[in-house]
Amino acid sequence: MNVRRRLISATAVTAATALGLGALSACSSDSAATGNTDKFDVVASFYPMAFLAEQIGGDHANVTSLTEPGQEPHDLEISTKQRAQLEEADAALYLKGLQPAVDEAVTQTGIKTKIDAATLTTLEDHGNTEHSHEGEEGHAEEKGHAEEEEHARDPHIWLDPVKYAEVAEGVGKAFEKADPDHAADYKKNTAALVKKLNGLNGDFENGLKNTKTKVFFTNHAAFSYLAERYGLTQEAISGIDPESEPSAARMKELQQEAKADGVTTVFYETLVSDKTAKTLAKDAKLKTDVLDPLEGITDKSRGDDYFQVMEANLKALQAALGAK
Image (cartoon, rainbow, N blue to C red):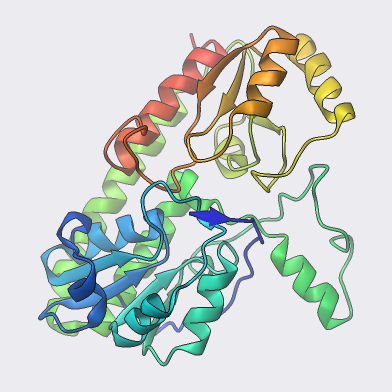
């Protein structure tokens, strides 16, 4: 998945939307997306959305993802075949603002049930890095400025278990409405997922409560929601866009901050180059480790699903921050 982070604009979810998502492993390529199956056929934009669909839809849903494992979501381009899959699916689950090509494709299709996860929780403006968008100051009066402000909203809500649980609840209600015959199961599955996410939140709260430092360095600014939730400070090398190049001044600033705040580790991720992170680590004499933004599961992932990788992220943060 390669999404050049055009940050989320909150557009109304076709609220009466619901998706039945079936186990991702059970989703096959053609039939899953064609709406020809006996199940509720759902097309999800990328892994975090597909995982929700899988968990909530259970046995009643057939789920496919537009973004393949190992593909950086932000630069995803929609093929003719994928557009046809969207047209034939029963529902689409996506996160508006993260993948412009998906937003456009969903808008142009006649699919009845469209669920925009961005409308199911509150998105915030985390554009306070050197890569923040111009025009985010003040309230824009013209449409162009308004759109710019919408794009400034941070889409990485799935890295905050609390916000992800809010999205899960909204998706569950949408499923119930779209496929009322299986509403009871969707409600049950949603409750189980939310309970598990609440438990994950508790693990992070307890695990990061007492640490030597609260500052961590990341390759790009994917972890703002997580940092805010647990009282941490994220300093990103490359801002919101994982492929942008930091200035020499930014690199020097981070070296100085590492000394001042007791930073021990520069985190990088598996789906984008680690070159800049390792350069900073070498210059500042810091360690490196992986903090996974969970945009996809690959052989390099430290776990097989969302929960396993998030637990691995917690352990990495505890080690880097000096958890007591």
